[in-house]
Length: 194
Image (cartoon, rainbow, N blue to C red; front, side, top):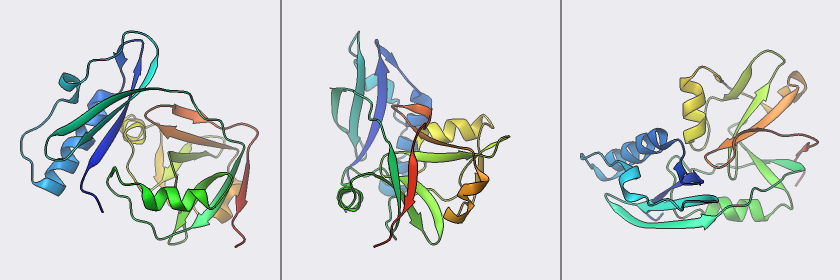
C-alpha cells in the first residue's frame, strides 16, 4: 500500500475547521509510520480561499507533499447496504483502491461489517441513537477527526454494534470532517445478500 496519507479539512468562507483534530491524527500517523518526531501545525501550510465551501486535501508522508482546494458539494444518501469485509484502513492512506472497489460493487453507500461488527461507511464514521444516547462503533476502520472530537466531548459512547441490533436504535448518523455530524433521514439499510 502507498505510504502517502492525506487529511480532508473543511474550509468554509476562509475558516479552517477542526484543525486541532487533524493535527493530532496527522502527527500521530507520522510518528507511527515514519518515526517523525517534529510536530506539524497544518494550519501554517493552508491558505484558505476567502469565500465558499472547500475540501482542502493535504497529502503527506514525513512532510507535506501537496495541498489542493476542491469546491465541495455534499452528497445525499437514501440507501445503505451492509457489506462483510476484512478490509484494513487504520490510517488515512491516499490509496483508497480497496475501499473504492468494495463500494463500486453496490449502487448505494455501504456500511462495512468486519468480524461481525459494524465499522464505517466508505466515507464516514457512523453512530446510532437509542432514544437517549448516541453510540459509535468501538472498532471503526478509521478513527475520524469528527468522531475523535465528539468522543472527547462525551457526545458519543463507543460500543460494539452488530447489524442485528438495528431495531434498538431510532436514528442513524454519518460523521466526517466535511459534513460534521449529520443525522440521516428517510433512509433504508439493507443487508448484502450476495
